[in-house]
Image 1 (tube, rainbow, N blue to C red):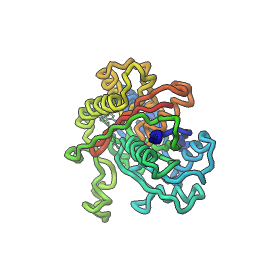
Image 2: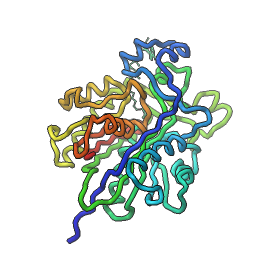
Image 3: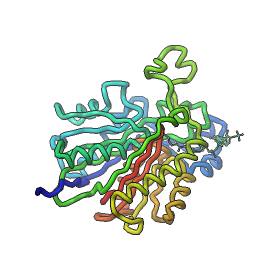
Length: 329
Ligand code: ACO
């Protein structure tokens, strides 16, 4: 019998727009203050895309860095997956725009949408494709420009989000099994707690829908918070169980960076000390699909996790969706 095909992580990369929006900047825009934002969320600053930058540009920046780290040419990719809730256009996909920007043709490219859990959903897609033998080398990107769907007059949400992109290159391997396990979940009955009403078939864009602010995010923060903690704990536990690994085997816990208090509550429930938890929320805010992959990339670059060590990634987002993954760097 042939040995099972595993997945090898070849390289990761990130891209952040140059402009930084600080809590002090936000104080000038809405009735808020640095103390409230810092104590309630842990956020200090976030990157904001320039007017001419679109999601596929951020995705391109992250992809080029990931390809460089992977030491392969773009022509070796045979599938592009992009997780985003802020695609360049409603259609065609950001993955198709990225394909052209990478100078590629003919290989399949598509977007997937699972809000803040999208990168972990993408990992599950990539793992299944590679293990089945359908595709060999996959570029998976998480990219979002949340500043474009943020109501900049709503202090409840506008302080929370930022822009950025992260990418990972994965390939088939007989020796390595770096995506050890992935566990996913969703509960659509919670969709009224976090959504963007306008732009789809429920509420196509009209002058009225724009005036009613239906093209920016609506979030019931407290209820989202309440659900995020148990679901992120569940996602971590399920991913660990599937992997056959124990918490003691894990070097670094990399949670979705939506709120410092959520991260602390999840770590406490899992009994993980905070010095084993990766945090960059103060610099990035919540960048939805880009959060876990940019956090992983930074953890690798800064040596917080080293070659051969295990990490648990966990995310939660609109849908609700959630996911966990045990990976070997
Ligand atoms: N500055 C100052 N005051 C504020 C601000 C602000 N930016 N925002 C809200 N407030 C006020 C509120 O108006 C409220 O005032 P009131 O008591 O006079 O009405 C008070 O602060 C408390 O508001 P709460 O909403 O109760 O604050 P809470 O402690 O719940 O924190 C927050 C709000 C940060 C949004 C939190 O609930 C949260 O992080 N929720 C989860 C978000 C999340 O995880 N999202 C993930 C998915 S995102 C995705 O999928 C795209």
